[in-house]
Length: 290
Image (cartoon, rainbow, N blue to C red; front, side, top):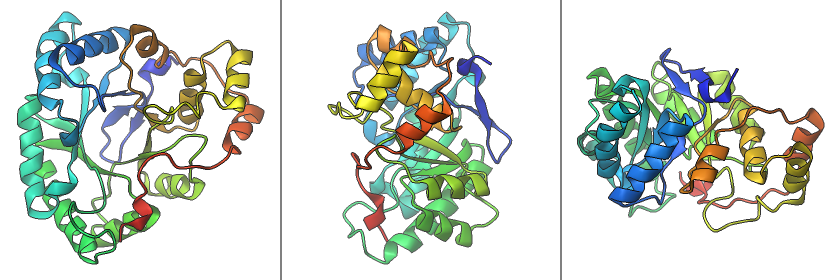
């Protein structure tokens, strides 16, 4: 099967493309329009954004023009946004409505709690647990009202997930979006998500912005050379081959097209080699959040 059409059936029975297009740090009306035009042309059908990316409105305007251009309808596209840490609790429903208004797309396919803690609150403050529960209650309400089709989380550890499942066992998060790459991956978290039917979706698959440590890793470059692929393609295929969702971002045409061109296999020996690389975290650490 062509990787472009790979999907994962969420707990709701809705399908999410396993390859999405990330938009973190991509801002500006013209730039958003240009990269989304290329992304749709390349075959991406999932777009990932967030309240704190400050590009939702530009994405919404671009899609109004680009969907008809590419003979697509709203229902052909999967749109994800995320709740800012400043809007936990009672403000979460309002934040979702604001994102929906900016994107102007009728409904969201997926809405994630971006961070398990509250802005301007100590990470180890006990109120984080009860506030997450209040936030989740509001997102369930938004889903039941049809504003969003699926709800999920981002940067949640096993402990955070267990707290949420204990609070609301009948409303599990559909997705947990976390930092995930050969230099940082937690098999216990992946196994937990598989057991609960939660899709693990990777961010920073290539190491994050301005960090070439993954792209230049000797194992990655060696495998890429052997397969006649780019190091970025090897890193993305590594996750995809484990049935983990990916949302690579890119600005150039070459990278946008290459990041979805993943119709190849990495051998089990090479997968093991990548799994055994040094472990180092490049993004923020949610372990400190109570």
